[in-house]
Image 1 (tube, rainbow, N blue to C red):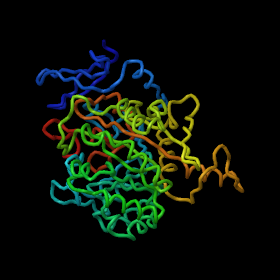
Image 2 (cartoon, rainbow, N blue to C red; image 1 turned 30 degrees about the vertical axis):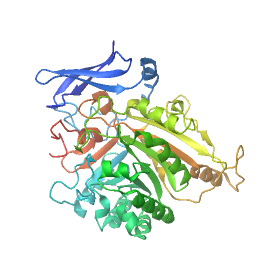
Image 3 (cartoon, rainbow, N blue to C red; image 1 turned 120 degrees about the vertical axis):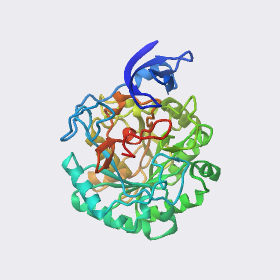
Image 4 (cartoon, rainbow, N blue to C red; image 1 turned 90 degrees about the vertical axis):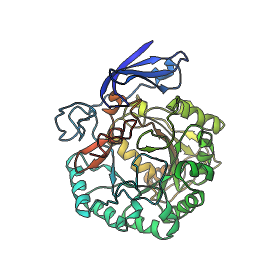
Length: 443
């Protein structure tokens, strides 16, 4: 049964195609499309029945056109920058500082370390900061790569961004330098870094050998220890792959809870089948319902699938999220979402502020007694205590050439910024065909 229509691309040539969302013989939801030259393609997009798929569809109808968007010529997904057809301004922006890396992960979406080493100059970085401020900033800045800690001038890059008016900086990192140099986390903290977005795929070195090419668990633990000592917020970021670590979600969540309040949450990212992905794309990639079932089953119901909802500002089928309050006995209480909303955030600015508040490591932490409000001298003190004892669990389901939905893409507010194309939605910037050819990254 056809339940919806959209546009997608051919995985072979990236030509835009009409696509249908249909129920399969198993009752799950698939995207189907046909390229006149390369044939038909079917991809699982929702591993659950139709009622669950429809319930998930609630999202904000607020219109947020990009600031000074450019007029499209070829149409989505070819005219990003952002174009005037896009339905969201930015929230989080990735600034890729280098293509160098001290790992060679088999699943790297950026194919880091393959081309000749290249670092953005400080002049180019300043230009990008100015461009972002002129096009809707300040955004939350994700310092990325490659591995951004390969640059010795990273503290200066953060300080420059602070001077330009950006208030939240997140470091996307494998944690190696943070682990090996005890004072490095404090140096970054003093420069203005808020949060470490730490690659963390499990508590078993076999997982790291498969996904990252070498054992890294001790490195991850030491990086967390050093970041916690420096007062940096830490978000654990597991890439989840079928038949590799899908059975590790519960242990990762428990580890994160055990390491609160330094660890502010867990952000799951089912593996993206673009860039340098050495894993075969399975017939059933990890979808939102599958991920939520794993969480509920592996936490013994401490976190339930029904706790979660889709994003409010972005397309709801891009993400999932729930926030909890931790009490002194270790129990969790689900925090309510905005009235009339499927999520805590209904605009890009809502999302930007939520992330900055939840993931920042600043402030002293307290436990809230069960069933009581902490006695504080002011409401501000209480709100700060409450903030420091919240725990966020979220995930992002990135799109590849098989399941790319242009209706989803037009609501994306996570962008990559570059001198040639401006701001490009993450899934468009990293999109590759089955031969690894890209629309933007190599252009």
